[in-house]
Length: 379
Image (cartoon, rainbow, N blue to C red; front, top):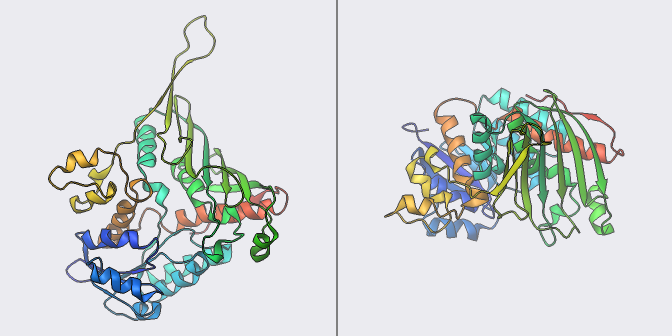
């Protein structure tokens, strides 16, 4: 790190390419270099001015003494080994979800992070969306009252996606449904009972031995709260949604039917004397943009491609979200600032491992007909 500025490597330019321009524009980043197994993509990003250079292999980045941090946006089966390799190389590591697909690998990542003294951050998009910020604000202001129950959903069809997705146990990639519940609960998930449902083509069952296109789980938190999450990956005709549902004593927040729909907020008025039940007020709410917590250089990345630098305030009110409901620049900023400030990132090993382990344990429960599974505390 030179002059308190980071030199970052971004691994994977499919989905990962969406983060390149954010790192390039971050005021605390000195340089951004890239790697992808398709070197033509690397060359394209350099040619377009989105990257300062590229690596010819993952190992070249690991061995580069001028590289301070590596952001992994690589296939799920590679996450654990690559994360451990990055930490063992003495570099800070950010990794897309899930953190790993086994409890053993979660412990190995925690140990590698402890040995290295470097930062690890799981880049969970749902914890930096417009919607999450809005509910967090409702909770902190007292508008929600006491949280009584939590729900999460992630409905998606993976037909024709890369081969490693085929037949993946749904809850192994349950982080988008589980993450907001853990973060809002103020606690950790300690136990899960889950069931799988439905049937799917035998070709999908073969790779992972998972027979279920749908898995649903009931989670118990250490503070006594409960939450439920449902995850679909195959052969389920439901529109895409990464849903968050929070039921409070005074108000509740419910995701719209489709992912891009405005959410519903319901508030309750006190029951009038002599009447039964409270009065409900339900309305859809357009989400505000929480760009103000970011460096000004990153504001444009919260709204997609319609940012007008001459009228930034108007642009930021249009509601056309950047990647994953405006979350991408917030993720990058937290990773970068945690390193600069020499502190743990918010989604650190403990939080990332609980979110991920809850899903791994949910699939184990589903494979054992709903048996209760204790979720290990991995720090």
